[in-house]
Image (cartoon, rainbow, N blue to C red; front, side, top):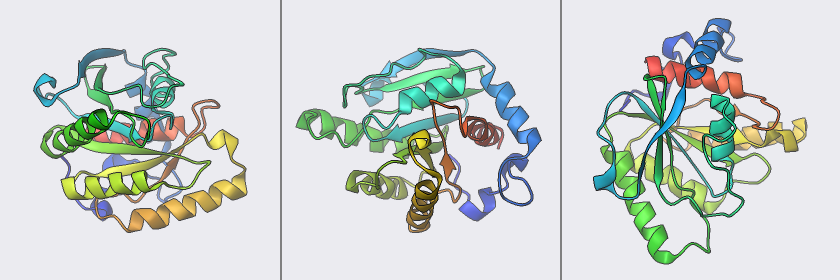
Length: 230
């Protein structure tokens, strides 16, 4: 697991242009090549003793129920049905593992913050999530998804604090930016960047994406390729 500071990580694998405004063309190409590889579902786990053995680098995706994790995974990999997209909040209650080109494993984590989920399910998920995060040696980063259309919820902040306690680097990815006008998106990004500064485990760069239009997908691929190569 990467324990370096956010300042040290800013230049991972040359992913950022010198002006800091985005990834270099070379980084974009590395991301494209990585995600052009075959991506396939390999494992599902509902308990820690069902986890696959640690192998290569892993990147996990977390977020509130219906934040768009499955849609984002499908957009990243160019597969329309790699991850199941559900319109029923709280449906995914397990860790789903996807192998990308024998180089990187993507982990789709259960959504959180769905009030109607059974109490026992929520407690089991929260306990397993923390134990997975804290004890997984191959986990490089958690991409924490926030809906760009709404403010961060208490559950989002609670997960950030959990990631701080687990000493796991996490990075904020805004989703559904196609539904937000540029001025509102700029305000949202500023608010999230301020939130990031309050959490020691947070990676300093906030990414913004749309699974519908493809906005930000190439930049996110570049970021994930850099994490994979670091």
